[in-house]
Length: 169
Image 1 (cartoon, rainbow, N blue to C red):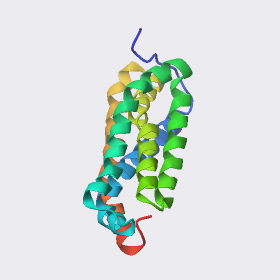
Image 2: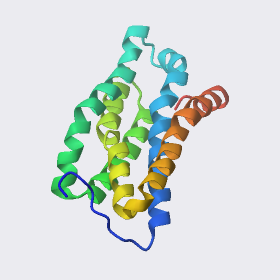
Image 3: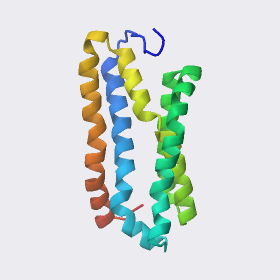
Image 4: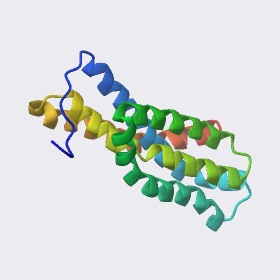
């Protein structure tokens, strides 16, 4: 069964699924929320358009670099521990992004956010496949897809509202 997650029966499958979906929604929101707030962030940090683009690029590049390493880390330390470390790291990096006082800090914290957030989606899928019997894999992936797409849908709306009525931070 190499390469596949083995089914592990669990008593609290519903709570695990909700936790996974909340992490995926958080990742989707944070990934897209900056797109809407970018002009406000640019003005606040006195950055040019080329400079502020690094805030988006650093996240994408770091996530692309880290994603292949996620499987190795999960195999070495366990899916649960790497997933929890990813959620904690992503949350901390998100808070640091909001507290960034300079463009350099924002780019660094977005890079950290990308490193931590890279594993959330694949580890979520692996966990859902582990906690659901094979006959429920289709249902589990449908729930996963619904939760995963909610973040990018909510991100621009939430970002626009927060930026307009409060602050980009």
